Amino acid sequence: MQVNRLLLLLLTVSIMACKKDEFAGLSTLTELKGESGVSYQESLAQWNEIKRVKGNSYVYQTTMVSWTGFGSTTELKVEEGRVTARVYQEFKTNQTNGQREITDTYAETKADLGSHPKGASPLTIDDLYRSCAGEYLIVNKETNTLYFETEKMNGVLTLCGFVPVGCMDDCFRGISISSFEWID
Image (cartoon, rainbow, N blue to C red; front, side, top):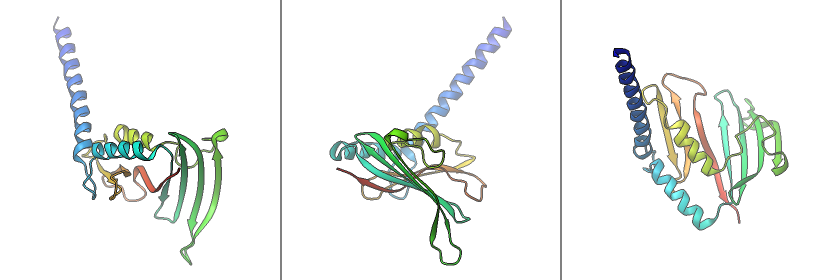
């Protein structure tokens, strides 16, 4: 009988701890604001409103650059809410003149979308908002520094992720949108 009570108590405490973490993640979505002063929830609402007005077709790029001079850019084309193309370029920075030199590249269409292992995943901006909330802004705030930034003019997501406390080089994990453009 005592064992059953102890198990019930442990189960109750575990459930309450999960709920507390869930609520902590939700507060991050409304409290964490970047330089633009826009929270995740506000940004998502603005994205949905702009998308309603402008449509669901656009092109965006993600860029990753290492402190060593290596990096990559992935351009994703979204038409009517579906990713239809992905273009990838990997580069290194020439130490003499500072120019980027392309070291690898590919272009995918609907037929072979996602067939290359390198580059950003073929995701829509809606997918990125879900990843932001469900993967990156829920990490432990005591062991990670959280980042959330939006476009100053319209409040749309540009950066969402985290860096483990104490990490020094190439530590950012998350989403970084370097350019965005609507298409007709």
